[in-house]
Amino acid sequence: MKKLVLAVVLMCITSFVAGKNIVCYYDSRAANYSTPIFPSNFSTTNCTHYIYDGVGVTSLGDVRVLSSYDTSSGFAEFLSLRKNANIKLFVQLGSERDGSRSLTNAIAGRCERLVNSVAIFLEQYNFDGVDIDRRTNDFDKGALARFVNRLRSRLYMINKQLSVSVSPQLVDAYDITSLSLYADMINFHAYNFTSSTASTVNLAPLFSAGSAANSVSVNSTLTSWLAAGVRRNKINLVVASYGQTYALASETQQGVGARSTGPGAAGSNTKRAGLLARYEFCALKYTEASDSDAATAYYFSGKNWVSIETEDTLVQKYTFVLDNGLAGVGIYTVDLDDANNTCTNGAYRVTELANQYFLDE
Ligand SMILES: *[C@@H]1O[C@H](CO)[C@@H](O)[C@H](O)[C@H]1NC(C)=O
Ligand SMILES: *[C@@H]1O[C@H](CO)[C@@H](O)[C@H](O)[C@H]1NC(C)=O
Ligand SMILES: *[C@@H]1O[C@H](CO)[C@@H](O)[C@H](O)[C@H]1NC(C)=O
Ligand SMILES: *[C@@H]1O[C@H](CO)[C@@H](O)[C@H](O)[C@H]1NC(C)=O
Ligand SMILES: *[C@@H]1O[C@H](CO)[C@@H](O)[C@H](O)[C@H]1NC(C)=O
Ligand SMILES: *[C@@H]1O[C@H](CO)[C@@H](O)[C@H](O)[C@H]1NC(C)=O
Image (cartoon, rainbow, N blue to C red; front, side, top):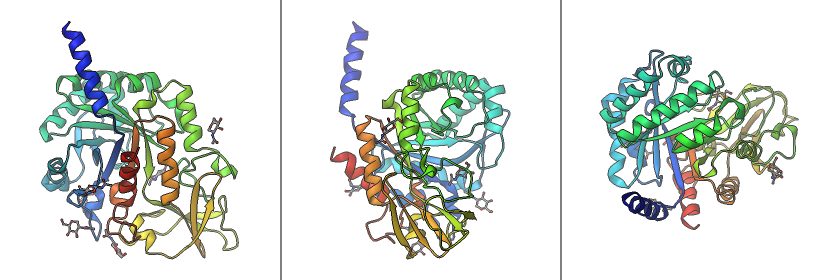
């Protein structure tokens, strides 16, 4: 009887909060830009979840804070977003930042210790959940499945949530049944499908159409995951807010698949080759072209080439989320969105549009 009552209560809660997820990543490196962006800048944006990106782990299974900014003010400022709304605040754990295999090693060799370290860390800083960053192909999928299972049980005890970030194009690298069972959310980073910079590629083709450069797409990868049995109501389609840039080999070849000599020049604020924040991109005046079969747009000027979402292409992706009954969207990252309305469509347009779109559902 008690169980039945609980089940009814849970059903009511579930249908009450049936809205879509809007999961916003904050990359703590943004606090170091010449014009920095801090968590306090997001108090008026509209996300259901925020994820603090920038904490590592050691191969021995301990959580490793990577910057003194995090513990001096980053975490505290981030966690104070909670007072503005009923939002969930996660921390992402990965090893990308230091380029090592430490997370892979800890999951494989120090599973129990890592589970404990994560639980203690979430309690210590009062995060609501953890996002495990598995967007690499250097791990044992059985070890990841065991880890996610163990971590899920441990986090139930302290009422914390668990999400896993995946690279959609690596469908065979994951035990999809375990992820569907144990993760509260699967963050499906469906952009930047190829590491080669030898030719121009759309950052996130929605459909595999048009040129050969679009063969891996949001649609093709999602279809593979669904065929492998993933639970669609666990998937957040993560879109990129930034622009991916290339240096063209020739000014006479400026389309998708054109030869490139490498990543484009770094932006003046973000200072990372091959990437421009939205506010950096909008300050440039490039020619727009669309690759409508793939539902993407790109921009060029001389030997500069950029692939970035437009309002149109975002709406098509958000519609795709609704049409496919997914859990919601993610935005990677909110600090690379149009923080100061340089694009003149309103600040943080990628998030704002998601909010309008999913509210109007
Ligand atoms: C971000 O917040 C800082 C301090 O809270 C403020 O000085 C700055 O102008 C804000 N940046 C933007 C782009 O709003
Ligand atoms: C976003 O949140 C702010 C307040 O935090 C609110 O004024 C604004 O209307 C919201 N935008 C949307 C699209 O809901
Ligand atoms: C900011 O830069 C300093 C100096 O290079 C570095 O020690 C620190 O870890 C950086 N902080 C973040 C959040 O990346
Ligand atoms: C895109 O993917 C490559 C690896 O394939 C990675 O090195 C790079 O950091 C990614 N870019 C972004 C902005 O995440
Ligand atoms: C999406 O992918 C599936 C499987 O590859 C394909 O059958 C379908 O036609 C695609 N949708 C579009 C609109 O291209
Ligand atoms: C704000 O706008 C200016 C001009 O468009 C740009 O140069 C600057 O880097 C922007 N950045 C931030 C973070 O506010």
